[in-house]
Image 1 (cartoon, rainbow, N blue to C red):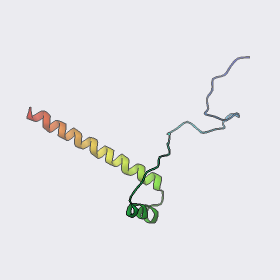
Image 2: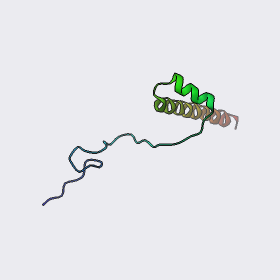
Image 3: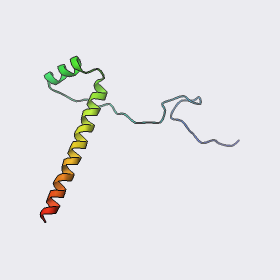
Image 4: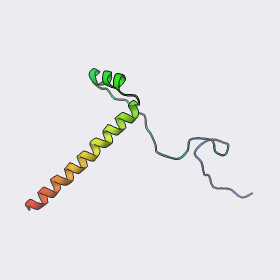
Amino acid sequence: MEESPINQYGGKRKGAGRKKGKTKTTKSFRIDNDLCEYLESKVGNQNAFVNMLIRSYKENSEALIKKIDKILEQQK
C-alpha cells in the first residue's frame, strides 16, 4: 500500500476536522467595569471588536515609530 500525504487537520474521515486557516488563541484579561459595560451594551461581536482595536493600535504605533526614526535620522 502506498501512503498518501495528510491534507487535513484532525478527524479520521476525509474532510473532517478544523480547516487550515487563521489561528486563534483564547486569552483572559481583566478590564475595568466601565469598559466591560460598554462592550456588553454597544458591541455585537466582542472578539472581532477587540482584534480590530489591537490591529489599529499596532498599525498606528508602527507608523509613529517610522516617523520618529525618520526624524532622528534627519537630525544626524
